[in-house]
Image (cartoon, rainbow, N blue to C red; front, top):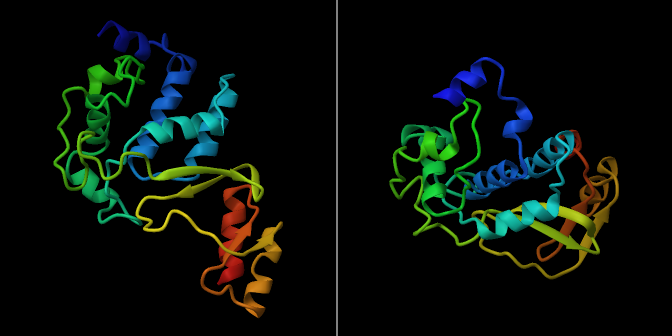
Amino acid sequence: MARSRSARCGGLRPRDIVTRVALANACAVVAATGGLTNAAPHIAAIAHEAGIRFDIDDVDAVSRRTPLLADLRPGGRFTAKDVHDVGGTAVILRALLDGGHLDGSCLTVTGATIAETYGAAAGPGGAVVRSAAAPLASDDGLAVLKGNLCPSAALIKTAGLAVLVHEGPARLASARRTAFVPSRRAPIRPARCGSCAMRAQSAARECARCSA
């Protein structure tokens, strides 16, 4: 209660909440829910603003050790509303806490810790959200890739994918505006893939317009 009063009076500041451990917690929640590729650069940007070293390799490390708990679209069966109907994000946080995949000592904006806030939340029912003891997969739905096509890193959602390994020719494009021109003239055939260097969400929207 004292911490909550301190937060309301301005005693608790963003950098008291945004710590390296808190950023790892954020990655764990993203991983457990099937991964949002935009989350990784956003979390890294928040870390940079706070003066904390937390990069794509840290995202990868947390993702690899976090099980997939939420059976969400597009790879799964349920939607965010279904999560809301079974108790919301609190259910996911409780499942991660019970499985030891979340550090409960981190502060929330109320001044209370995550464990104090969510430790007594409703447990997962086993359909929309599973327990850490019976996950959909032992690792997360987000993968960090590195190689000659993406020396810095690339992100891919793996939740719901049946094939996680692909071997075959790749068609490469270094700019979003040129990515889809060859595809219209000579469509990418089965057993081949396309790769386009994209650096921001605006680039993804541009590609969507180009492919329309």
